[in-house]
Amino acid sequence: MTKFSLSLFLVVFLFTACSTPSVKEEATIDSVEQTQEQIVEKRFYERWQAIIDKDYEKVYSFLSPATREIVPLEQYKAMLNRPYRKVALQKVDCDGDVCKVVFSLVYDHSQMSGIETLMGEKWFFLDGQAWFNLPESDRTL
Image (cartoon, rainbow, N blue to C red; front, side, top):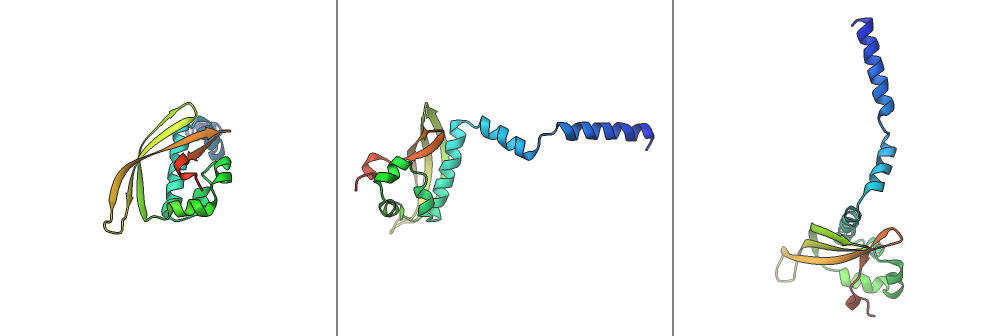
């Protein structure tokens, strides 16, 4: 390799290295640019994975603080204790601070297994955070 080629390589290498953002910078840039739909999608999958794993304390944390004040953890656990297997997100549509999620859910029943059904749920944004909207009919004690 000639001195000129080596010098050119070093200049290009150093220029490229200096202009490449670090992983931390990229994460910050990406998080700022996330849409409401992307935020809800991520939280949707985290919540449903916790349901499937029967990690009810984690699932409970997806409820807003106000909802957790009126729905005790034990009551919420009873609502979720079902043999859910998997979910597949179909779409997320946000209008203002309210997002509608459509997904398919696979679960088992005492007389049938692998039942797949199309479901929907709502999420809302409050103070920059996406919260699962527990339907009012499930909030009664």
